[in-house]
Amino acid sequence: MTRTQKLEVEPIEQKLVRQVDEVMKSIAGLDAANAMQVFLELAREIDDEVGDRLLDNNPELITRYRPLATSIYQQYVFEFEKSARKQLMDQVNRSASTFKAATDFFGSAAYDRTEEMFRHLDFLNAGRIVVVGCGQLPFTAFYAHDHTQQTEIIALDVLDDTITGVVQLAHMFDMNRLQAEVTAGQLFDFDGADIVYVANMVSPKSEVLKRIADTAPSTVQVVLRDPYSMGRLWSERGRDMLHPHFMETGDGAGANYKSQDVYLKRAT
Ligand SMILES: C[S@@+](CC[C@H](N)C(=O)[O-])C[C@H]1O[C@@H](n2cnc3c(N)ncnc32)[C@H](O)[C@@H]1O
Image 1 (tube, rainbow, N blue to C red):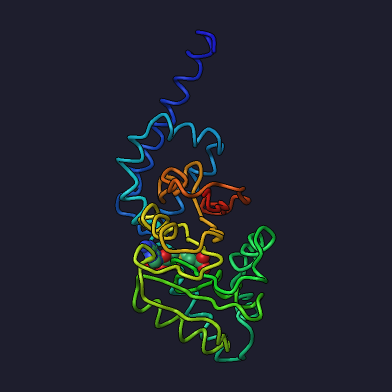
Image 2: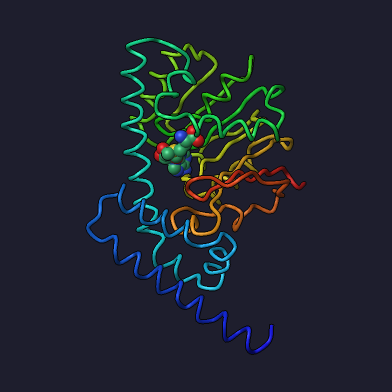
């Protein structure tokens, strides 16, 4: 890079750092839904590559702002899932149908997004799939159940009420191969798991990955939902802390919250 180019690049990055500082100040007093919209607007304004470079060159932005941004993201998704789940239950009470049909009324994009990973991995021959961080609307676990015939699906979450709700939904849609457990991914025994999906919001991702490496069969395939660009402000990037036994084999398209699937397999 020439001296003139450097002089042009530096002020742009400083301007972006200031913009992030201002955005973080501007969300004071906003509820999680509105604060999240402000974050997403910022993320849309910044090119993906520029956002990644900005955070690589200014790691203090992550140290300073991630705790607050993460708690806003968690609160926002929790509230969104809670109200979408309530609507889903009301809908189902009116006319029982499949989970896919029942989700159509509020948009099943999250359910359909799961299809991408099915094109990358051999789900049909999987005996056991584990979803770490299934959430109140377990799109990934339910999609996996809907698109397999004999596979056992295990859905994990750290929240008690979330799992109670998942059990209730699974029962309503006759998902008898789905088991839901209140367990943290970093404590679960992944013995027999052919495929493990780790949700974007899961934390601490490094410990969950280490636990998978320690307890899953050597043939395990992992789908790590990971943030990119400004999404790294509100969730952990597992790729930064891959256990040495894992290697990346590819990644998927980006989506709404600046997250994408990263495919991993055992390196040894
Ligand atoms: C909001 S959900 C998103 C999942 C999405 N609905 C899907 O189907 O992919 C993410 C969940 O991960 C859970 N979680 C976070 N850390 C976890 C951990 N270490 N082990 C298990 N669950 C975890 C949170 O409680 C939250 O419910």
